[in-house]
Length: 65
Image 1 (cartoon, one colour):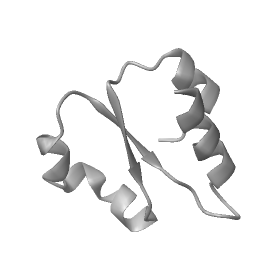
Image 2 (tube, rainbow, N blue to C red):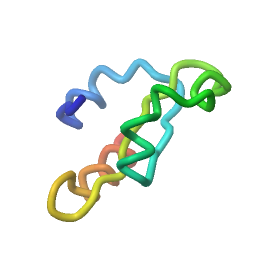
Image 3 (spheres, rainbow, N blue to C red):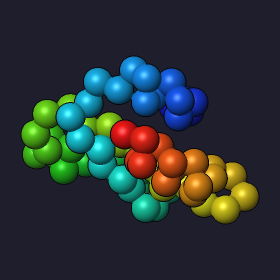
Image 4 (cartoon, rainbow, N blue to C red):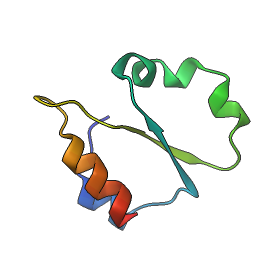
């Protein structure tokens, strides 16, 4: 799901962030047992790639959170 980072910061209801480096891993994150082992309700974020999802936007999101 693509969301505006400003909206995410304003409505952040998570207690942690899981940053995923690989698009393939991000696409299948919902199916991995790893998420069930994390305490609380983590926000899963893809770090981005040049040319599509901007990595600078991900860095700004993490800094603002």
